[in-house]
Amino acid sequence: MKRILVDMSLTSLHHGHIRLLQKASLLGHVVVALCSDDEILKAKGFLPVLSFEHRKEIALAIRYVEEVIECKWLIDEAYLNFHNIDLLVHGDDNVNPVPPERLVLFPRTGGISSTVLSNRGDS
View 1 (cartoon, rainbow, N blue to C red):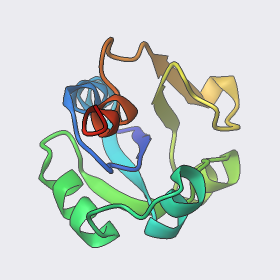
View 2 (cartoon, one colour):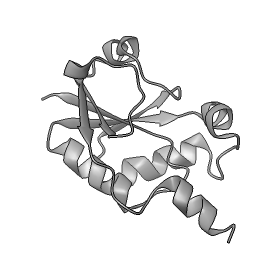
View 3 (spheres, one colour):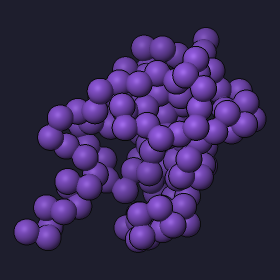
């Protein structure tokens, strides 16, 4: 069975994440690459409300997820090779430097994103 990687920060969880994980599960064994707290701070400018361990616990509770590993903000081919990953699955906003033959892109779920959710409290 192919090992399929989905990289996430999971600073919030929404139906777009679940849909992406479900699609990934149709391709093989789903491994979530979960960003460390420090990587989220560097990339997004804040520490997540939930620690890495708590976000990992949530990810593992999702029926499509078989395994969770820690990652940096960007995934590259060396990371895929080190973890024996066949394909990276991502939304069509992907910026990870992964060769096209190891990348499967799906359209993002319209009208929802972690940024949209976090900005709702600002209004």
